[in-house]
Image (cartoon, rainbow, N blue to C red; front, side):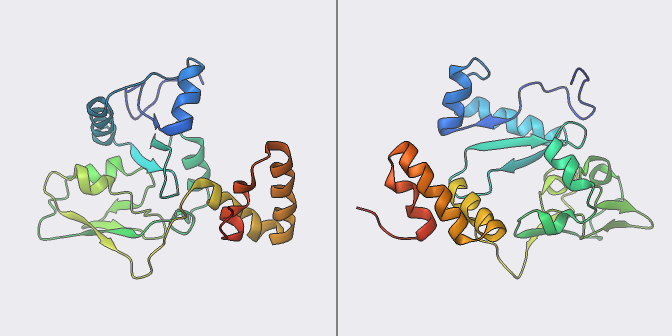
Length: 201
């Protein structure tokens, strides 16, 4: 707060969609933009060395552009030293050493400190979250994203995601009690549908 970002001069970078966008616009904390402007912002963010992060669900409602000096979520994960286990991703970076000229562009831009240079560029796979920033910014196209053998399938919505997390942490019946209270408050039986995986008519 009160300090400039060390990574970029962009002041409008994170994007919101659906209800989240409507809420922020109605409260004067965001403005509507066109598809072309959104793509331009994301392109500039990536060139600046910001990680593009989406909602961890198929139906996403935000795209954050993160750096390790401003993003509290990213900073918290970096403190653990094993961010690859925390981030849900299906990819990892791989370097083609025949194309790499050791210009250190990837090393300087990597927000998770996963890339180091010795006699060649080395990737620490405990720190690499497969964001692809090194791939898109490499001037020699020497880095590619490779698919992991075990594929992670994100939930349909954030609501499903949070229910799954709560269920693992507090137990299924504790979560059901919470959902029932929400149903009574909002008079909406569909709140229970994702959790029980049943069709409510």
